[in-house]
Image (cartoon, rainbow, N blue to C red):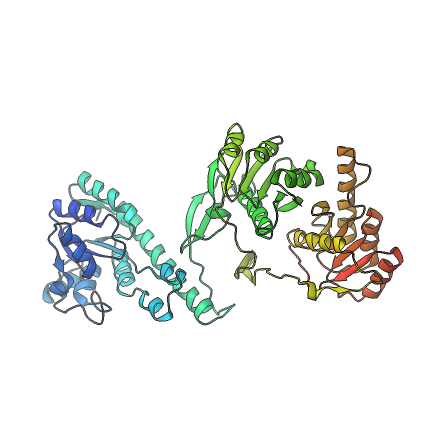
Length: 529
């Protein structure tokens, strides 16, 4: 059946947005309005005539509203196949009237959880009757229209006007698809709460991930791939996906991936001094702190100005005009900041392709959660890497202990190395990266590549020597042989921070002692594949 004329509508909503206007549009078409509890009250307050659900079913609403629509006269009216003689006969025999339109949105379960409600209130906000009606109506979309989103009300009213009080099959099919997606997402949110929050299971037998489509992207990592952005189904959280885009063309898949890497790293310094992170291809190519953001930016850029071209810049302070102007001196894809003043926005205005993302706040680097990666035939889930190394965990293993400055540089380099693809080597001096080696198949090559970049930077800026001289170096995992450490010593490093735990630790420690450098073990590694 292509068109279904709407004669009776059942309305039961938690969110009353647009309800009165929709009710008036339906009433103007002569549609009988049947409703429940607070929804019926809101419609009557709008001056509309409403039939109570208890009048339709012959049963009162009971058990604090838990039982009101779970009745054959409701679900028979929704599920009855109108061109099936047996269904029609059953409806006539039991005085079940057809319901042509259902308008339902569900109890705010996710919002209730987010505001920290007690368990009993959370349970009460698990909707039962609503999803049941939604699914019944959606299944029988050949004859029934199901509306679950207030954003669709205006379109429904317009189509009723255009189709002389009817809704087309194409509309009913689209609404049914949206309705089943809603109930699947709703149930997934509840299942996730029971598993993770209520039962404290990190890896339950079945994992449901409630997400919703935000936008389709131009393409994926490459133009021949398709891509889209999805957001958590519940209330918004701090993250790159929720950032406000102030200017610039639409973000690509790679932009989102790189900007997320920049935000995750800058979040490590959210309570620290002014800090700037520059990322290229999801790897930091420069990180620095300073008295001001522009000072930090200049120091971060000097680590590897070649890689910074076309990169992502993230800052941990509201962006000012001077720093924005400095960033604009080279081609930059995306800038991520908590906020930006008028001067900063003006400085970027001339760069039409530069995307400015304002996060408002930065995510907590210690927040719990899971990460997921797809593999052929399955998925890998793990807890987020929230590992932190305290001073008490550090073990000095060489004859020479690090100086206070060396120890501070070790800690800084270690923080950055956590966000560099393995094998990762990071040189740092006085609160700035001096060289970064990422993603190599062996640790020695990462140490050498970082040193080469530092030497090139020294030549570019006319420095007397590379900043790796007198630096601290961090290795994300242990040195399996002394060669990687010796490459760092050759680059001028005077202190090393690494997890330790190799069967050749003694050999590596001996090499450090012979070179006269300090080395500390963390007992923790930070692989990032």
